[in-house]
Image (cartoon, rainbow, N blue to C red; front, side, top):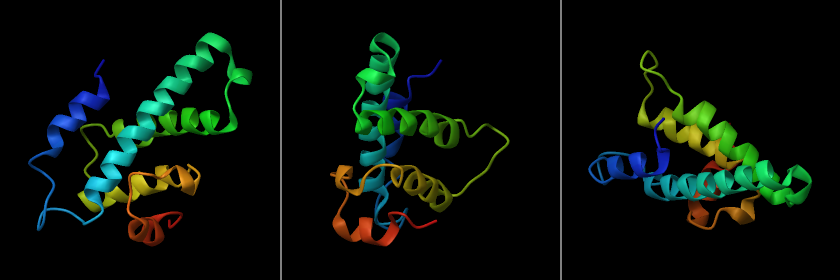
Length: 117
């Protein structure tokens, strides 16, 4: 198995920047990683303590982590998608979270992409 967080963070440095990707890329990536990390923690708590021990927000993060693994990470070798398609999937996933949880993204990007499908 691959540990997603360190693997993806090493790939970002040379692939983000002016003329390479969209302006929201860095903010979106940072928020996705933070949300996934929190979701993994929530899933671990859920296993140990049960779902009833989680707050409603933690339950949302646990669902986010599962969807992130299924829709974002599990792309597979046969599937090709552009960076814009990947960012759109990221925003679809981030839109699962309450807007006030998006603390790593500029408001202008949230206004532009949050909840848009």
